[in-house]
Length: 626
Image (cartoon, rainbow, N blue to C red; front, top):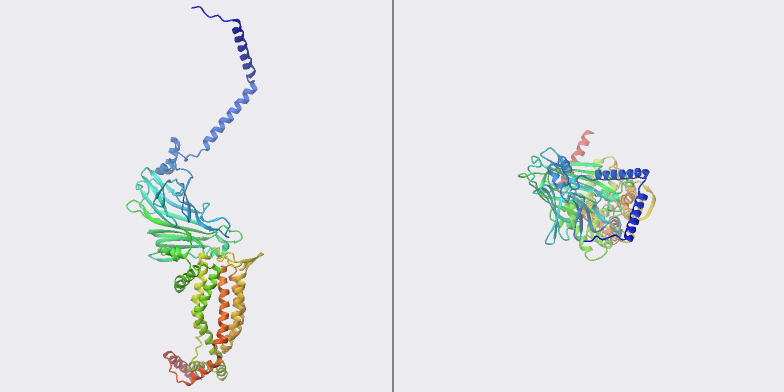
């Protein structure tokens, strides 16, 4: 076969292309200086790669043998949890129409709890109430392992699993030491509920964790300020707990640091003024430790948190495992909601002890609830409520004034006895008591009605701060009936008064002044000065000015709803007293009745007879000494 010959054009083209390539290679060859610079750049890039490799976290996902070895050295069997894809900072959100919760993989506990539908400080602020946010809470179990390690669940990664059971949302968080070895938190959120089902259980950890002593559970919360007045909110922020089958107690909210222990604890509540978080258990904690630390040393500086609460709770092992069925409540501190759970949670509310709490629970709360259910505004509801209370108390007011009127009628005769026996105190007292008996007048009759009003007064004093329904409800110039009604902001702060002027306390103080002025004169005329006794007229004159002033200072930072009540209450009382004095009580009829009683032979009671005999014996002994 004949070989193909190259023509001249092909040869020339080949030579030209070869020459061009050689020229390009020559012109692109770096100089020695450029070669050195290139070596420096390559070295810098190599160093960056090394630095980035060293900065990579070792526990994020354990893929190399070195990282696995380090994790096992630090965590022992729980290094397994760090090898899972869930070993990261992710959170899972579960939410219903009233509550939104975020649970973190790290620690497995709630890192954000938002109460939906309620705003902080002032309404229309747009910022919802968060009981937990920005690492103000911790929920930690200390794990003492069999290989002498002490681990904390808050530092370890849990594996989340989300599911549903009907309408309920279920989130399980498992801290794993192996495929079937774990510590589990289980959260169940139901529609429309502030109360979660919550459980802690372990499986297969008998050979991993020391089961000879209980696990130490620590729940800690720094309570956020959610209301306008930080001092008022802090006063009602306290730790409450139930123990020994239904007993309840609390830590003093006013102390800088309060601590205590309790046995057989069934719930612990970190109560803020209008919101609360409560941990309940079906299996009582045998011995619990509680601590409350006041974080408000200076109200001008400490404005974010109010208290720091800590509860240390033991989790007992049974048959090598922990199994606690519990509940968790995050929501309003509202009596009706808490009471409906029928788990003694109404004791979280500071309604007063004994008869005071009884009046609030069974009279005032139902009555106020009925009034507000009529659809009227909360300010009008307080006025209607006040009118009803004063009407119910009017018979006691009448008896008190009637007693004063009787004492006023016989005052001249008492004065005669005082003048006649001014040198014989025993005889003077004896004759005075005899006059009271004949006239059918009791000096204690005026005191008894006043004493009877004390439970009502104290119950109301506890009632208004506990009424969640008043929160951010406006009336007239008050934009929040659960807080103070500032009408003027002062450029300075007055000790014990504050940096603002509240109008309702001023109105209440003025009403108290006129009420006391109306009653003080009658009391002075009814009670003549007794020799050797303090001058009550001077004391009453002092109280006429001191009481309104105390009211003004004390209530300036209190709930405007409470000041509104006292303003209306004193106005009504002044009106009732005016009607009783001018249209009901007739001094002439009272005088005629007293004279009629004097003419009757009245049988002495055993008490009166005993008192008379004691006074006669004392008088006889005094004569014998002479």
